[in-house]
Image 1 (spheres, rainbow, N blue to C red):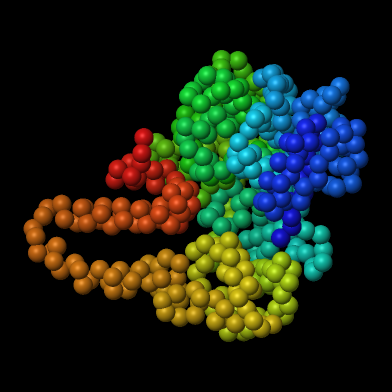
Image 2: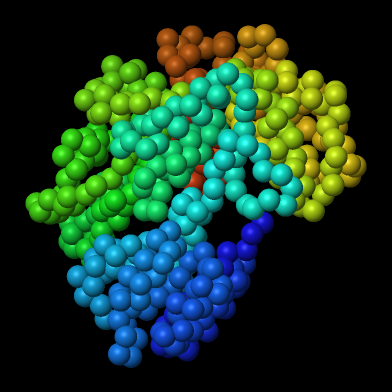
Length: 481
């Protein structure tokens, strides 16, 4: 995998040494400088993925350097560091295009997390998205692979809507490639040299999402120690991707609706309005109309979002694309892991074509990645894919419920049948509900334990939304206040 390149500019050599050591330990390539006049040439020479820049050098403004860098490379992620800057300085840094700012002294673990997010944001803007799989040795990028009639229609729609400012709603199951479509629209639009920021609404607690999107005033809530510029203001002039918008709380939906209607909003704790120019792309795996019927999603926001709708079909509905996708991923992971797998056995391809792929393209990619890593030959075989190799990982047939290829009926029968006879002796009107709730709670506890308490990953593992997981955790007393 590509090593992230970071450039740090600060007038404290001690700080540079600490940061360089820390970030190198995280696998990054790091260059440092204490000379502000040499920063721009060093950026041109090194082409870093991220710059950590002090707000104030001796006699030189870091904000002036930030503005100059952004003129030359508007997509370069820059984190500003300040030990004595005012709130206004921090806000001005964000308005000039900084990804974020940190106040000295800072906690290294928090800085590392911010660095990773900033690098990822830069990658989303810079990494090219194409419709044709690149040949071996071509520049890095990602590809939306497919020649099925469904995919060809999607390519046409991207071409039609990219140049407009129309809001786009991308629908499809998890793993179908919704983010790639959003990035393809951005990269083919007139805003391609402006910011592209993405926020996953399911990954951020409801209490923090509003602040993340719109910013907050100092003292607006517990922990709000400084004014914070939100992602909408940070993305001014660019394209904002709201991933899994169906998981957004109703109160936050109302503020997003106002942005779409009037291009204005107020940060949390402020009555002052901020005007922005942002093109919005949203995605969801949910049926939003059902969410509207359940009073979980605003109907007026739904119509504002679906000016143009793009539906990404699940992989099981475009199986003719599986051979193309397989060849693309094998070539990709040959490069990554320095392998030389030349072909795929006919038997394996038959298995790949018959499997349901509940995780869609993402699941196929992960399966091929594992197979390439584990294969000792120059040909991929069915035995390299545990989920295809028979009991119990083979995909179930017909209408039998399955998860990850496991036949749930047989799995549960083998586990539970021997122990169910005892409780069935008692007569209890609430027996079925209590047993179902008990099993539900055990599954949630197991998922949380497997993911070290991470709710987003646990929800994805269980195939439910994060909001649903939190509701169940609260119901079963698993959610601490």
